[in-house]
Image (cartoon, rainbow, N blue to C red):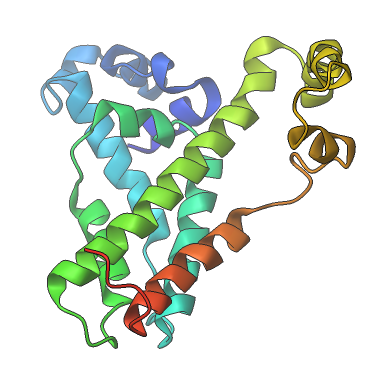
Length: 212
């Protein structure tokens, strides 16, 4: 799987095929077909291969928030190393053993809390929804300059006249000051957003939120 992962890292997921991986290995395609029948199977194996990178060898922090933060940071770094992981989200590639172990680790973060399994699963779903949305947006933003051949500053310069026209017309009264102050992209909101998600979970645990 290392050759397939390296190929995807270098050229993207579209470059990956059984024949191409065989060529990278200096083998005949039919040799690989005897082990892997379809590209979907290859993608599933690749996903499980990189999922091992987020597993934690040592015990998780005793504090549930710190445990989830640790796992979130590892998951974010995984997508930064392998941005094609985002493409597999849309393709609904089956989760393998390492992926399931990662889910188990995230559930283990809730072990010290007096909550039932359904509540733990709901908490995890909220956590995952934030993580998935953030890393997808981040990966798309990182990939766009490479695909378009322009950097973020050049893209902003292209959009500037249109935005300025709307501002000068008196529109975007709330957004305009933020643009002027450079609020967009001014900082990394990952940890802050995670903190808000975890604050919400903690509020529920304290009895401040009983919705659902």
